[in-house]
Length: 323
Image 1: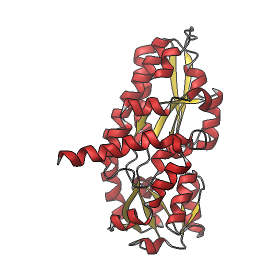
Image 2 (image 1 turned 60 degrees about the vertical axis):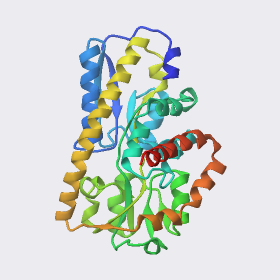
Image 3 (image 1 turned 180 degrees about the vertical axis):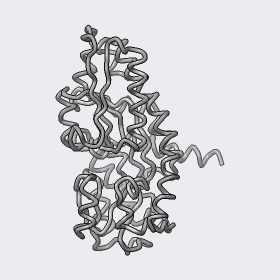
C-alpha cells in the first residue's frame, strides 16, 4: 500500500511482543486466521517478534480495543468495518444495504488490493492501517417471530452494529435499532429488550442466539467484512522489510479465513437447525426496493465513498455484461 512506502526504517527490538485482539471465540474463523497470521510472522521473523492473540474480548470491547490500537498499546486487531465508520466515513460504504448482489461480487471487492489501499489512504489520521479484509458472509435478520416481509420489521427493535448507516437502514425499514455490544445481545434478547438482531448464521450457534430466536430470514441486506488492521504508530516504527512480513502474514490469514468461513457456515446451519431454528427464504427484491433510496442519500451525505461505491457497483455490471 502507498503508506507503507514512506515508512521510516528503524531497528525493532529483539523479541518484540505483538499483541493481537479480537472479540470472537477461539472457534471462530477470525481466530483461526490469526493463528495462521502468528505462524507466518514467527516463521519468517521469529527471532524478532513473538505474537500473542487475545480473543473473546480479553483486550476489551471493539470500542475499547480500537482506542488501544490507535495509541499503539496493542499492535493488531480484527474489527468490523462498521465499527470503523466513526473514524473514517469511507468505511461506511460496506454498510450500504444491497451494495452487492452476490457474495461472489463482495469477495472480489474486498480482496482487491486497490480497495484496501484506498481505505488506508488516511491511516495517519485514523490511527489504524487495514492490511486485509475477511469475509463475514451476508447479514440477515433473525427474530423471535417470523420476518417474512418488510412489514414484519415495522415497530420491532433489532440490535444492529454501531454506525450511522445502520441506524439509517432501520429508519427506512420503519424499525427501531439498538447498538449494544455484540456480547450483550443474548442477554438483551432474553430480557425482551430487543425482538431480534441481524448477523450471519454463526451468531445463532456461537453466541447461542438460536436458543431464543427461532426464525432466520435470508434477506441478505448487508455484506460487511471484518478487517485485520494494524496500529499505524507501530507500523510506522518498524523497518520496511518487517512491514512486508506483516502484510504477507495478513494475506495468508485472509486465505485461511475464507476457507474456514465457508465450512463454519455450513456447520452452523446444521447446528442451528438442531436448535429448532427455521431458515426462511424471503422476497429479497421487496427488501431491496424498500430501502433503495438509501443509496442516493448516502452518496449525497458522504461524497467520500463515491469512488469505492462506483467500484463496488461496477463488479455487478461487469458480470451482467458477460452474460
